[in-house]
Length: 396
Image 1 (tube, rainbow, N blue to C red):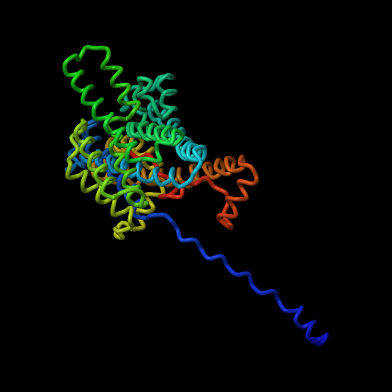
Image 2: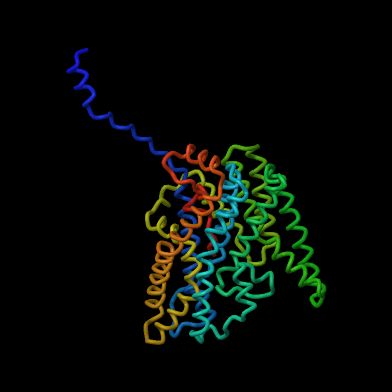
């Protein structure tokens, strides 16, 4: 080869680097949509049926949506499925707890602050929270301390937090490795305990033990644990672990126990329909749910859940005081709730949680961070839960 050819060759631009192929997303959009549907279900329930019964419209609304309990039911089953996916995907317990706290508390505490303002300036709420009830609400579990929730929808967040504790205990003790045996035992305890509590309270209504039983029932979320069980066992079927028929029987047993101890008159046909939707969505078999507006609502569903009820009801009352009709008031309040949910998601929640995740990830040993970076080239180390839209959220 001549000197000229060597010079020409060396002057050639370097070959472009090969692009890393994009990893296929593991997100299941149908599950995102189910969370959005649960949230919208609750919003419609609170702005029509609950508002009518609690405050009363100035003139007839003309319709009501009394099915909010089914949004909660769907969410608890969905939460069981998604959290089982997360926890069994070789994630460290400390990461799981950190991800949940980072995800839940900043927006929740902001909701507490905003509600203190609403209670102070809106006479429709009648009483302002005391210092002790505010502190109890800050924990997300006020009912365990004998106080009511400041934002009515967040009674379900208490159950969700207790479910996380249940998952951690079962993980640390190795029980979660046999979920069918675990959940059948837990569901059996719920059945026996709740039936006894109901019998005892009916025969001895004045006994002090009724308060203790109620506390135990709340602490172990006995009336709702069977719904989480259905989701957990569905994840076992989807993951191909164990016998399908055994887990299917476990799901049916969980559903039967839920209705045996249910105090809210859920319709078994609705339970079958909702679980069928969840199962089909888990396998990505309902493409109709991949509707962009639903996916957007899913993105903001946690803050929409937190901020819609008290603020939306206050806005309805204020609009009606100026002569705005109830239908228009509900429509405006719905748009307002979505706007507040979007604003708090994009301008408050996401920036803060991104910083907190980064801070948590920086606490890892450098070797651990390097291993995670190698496993996901070009991505920041993250504790983000690799499931539906940033993590299962508490919507009620």
